[in-house]
Length: 68
Image (cartoon, rainbow, N blue to C red; front, top):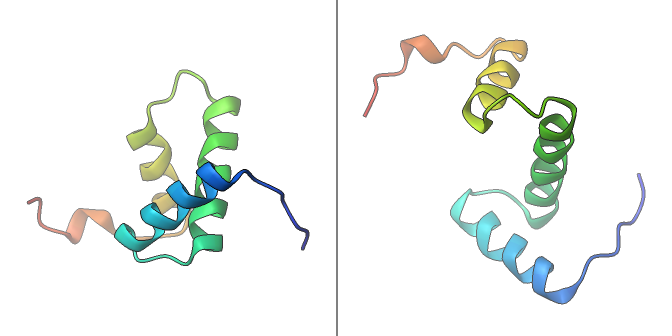
């Protein structure tokens, strides 16, 4: 585990997003970094598809959840 230095403005945005997403600040930052890394590695894949693939890889059954 390491330390990543980020600016105060980005830290504040992470803090606000973490509240909405019910994640810790560190978990929110890690999520954004992971999704950003996957997006860079797969530039033609939309965000929703990246998320769907990650859920599928984790064996999360999304087809049983009713669409809102």
